[in-house]
Amino acid sequence: MLNLAIAPLVTKEGARIGRLVIFDDVTEREDLERRLVQADKLSSIGLLAAGVAHEVNTPLAVISTYAQMLAKQLHGDETKSKLLDKIAKQTFRASEIVNSLLNFSRTSSTAFEPLDLNKVIRETISLLEHQFEKFGIGIETELDEELPAMRGNAGKLQQVFLNLLLNARDAMTDLPAGDRRVLRLTTAADGLGVRVEIRDSGPGIARDHLARIFDPFFTTKGARRGTGLGLSVSYGIVEEHSGVIEAESNPGEGATFRLEFPAASRKPVNA
Ligand code: ADP
Image (cartoon, rainbow, N blue to C red; front, side):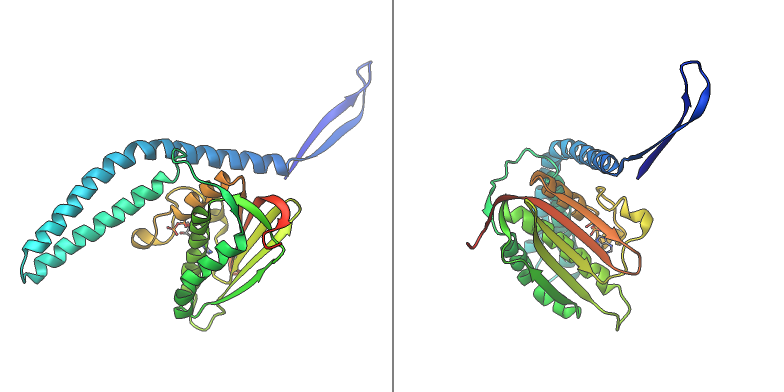
């Protein structure tokens, strides 16, 4: 991103003797501004969510409990018990959405400890391995064994990788049969930080969507499959870890998510 300014060059007497042309590289400033706007969006959602979540969760729990109690009283009425089952399932889903909204509020304190990001990634993969196999998706990893430790919360970071991997899975299952389906995960030490790259061979992200994927409630998956909270929650978690997350995609060539975190020290975890 370049800022171009042209001003007349004038002598003391006021005669124009030329032009002053200034090229200013504002890429970093633009980037910083974009991140600030995103953080601001998320923190206002956080305030709203913290206020609403508790109020909504209580009636949801009541509905779910009564639906389950009624289901127990119905003996052999298949149709009605199916309906009650649906009520209970939908209240669970609503409650899940409310709880993920709560992730935006920084009120809950997160315990940070030194951790090996490779280990978090391996555990996440092992959770999803079976699913990926089922959809014919191969997983390739290139994990830097000399990766420095970082400070963080393993549970929250796992949530980030789960979201990214599930999105990649969804993107690749939409591919026509026979297309290459590969997820590539790379970690590397980068200066004083830890870098992770997650690349999929899915259809990629449309240019006008790319700027919006980290926004709360932005989804292209339809109301039943997506909530549009996965990436915005992940963005919040990465930020809480003083990290950066960004996406890059050329439509038709898959999507790449890059994450960077500061290292706790330069020593590798296993040293
Ligand atoms: P959800 O998964 O509920 O839709 P997310 O916030 O996780 O919510 O993702 C938002 C949107 O970003 C998705 O609906 C999809 O359009 C896009 N997206 C995310 N990851 C990928 C990917 N790997 N490939 C293509 N599109 C993606």
